[in-house]
Image 1: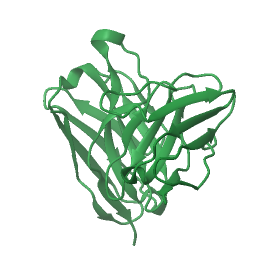
Image 2 (image 1 turned 30 degrees about the vertical axis):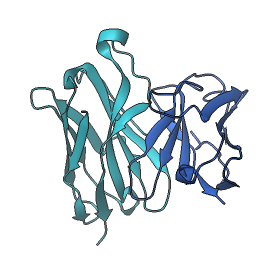
Image 3 (image 1 turned 180 degrees about the horizontal axis):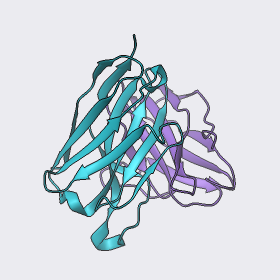
Image 4 (image 1 turned 135 degrees about the vertical axis):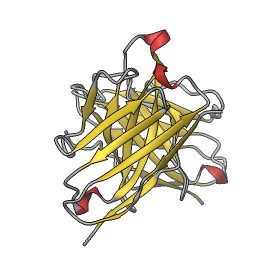
Length: 110
Length: 127
């Protein structure tokens, strides 16, 4: 199973919105609702921001939203803030008791 | 509060073995599936293995199948990863993670997303 495809980098100015894509296949992102997004600051463990494509855990700001179209999932961060600068990883259940991650996107707040 | 604390990391020669532990607290350990996820230095995340809430089922990534064994001791609230025949490409930070759903609500379902992560332990495989 190949890794999910994410752009290596993304950027936006404070207050702007940025969308990060995560492209998989019909056999993973396109089929299963278990698509998640994780935020990771340097030296820290990842933190879940979105699960089941578009659900937000309690405590995650509603500036973070998730969606999916076909085999591509997306994470949108609205009203960018300095603390949003981090690495973001998507993941998807891929069937057959297997999980795959994207390669990660470094988000820069300009 | 939920805590997952990994231990057992270090430097090991190729071909040797190592066992990681993850001590859990702050939740009913025996109600949740648990995973190991690793992150190579400067690179991305890779799911490694999962054990069901009662330890009756284990699943592995192809890259570690046959070499790594995940297990748990629900009486000690501890998760393990026995790593044999280690290779340089196994060098990574290994995280213990909790599956988001509990067996009380969802039976034995494993959803493969993680609501809590440990701080990670670094394994370096090098001669």
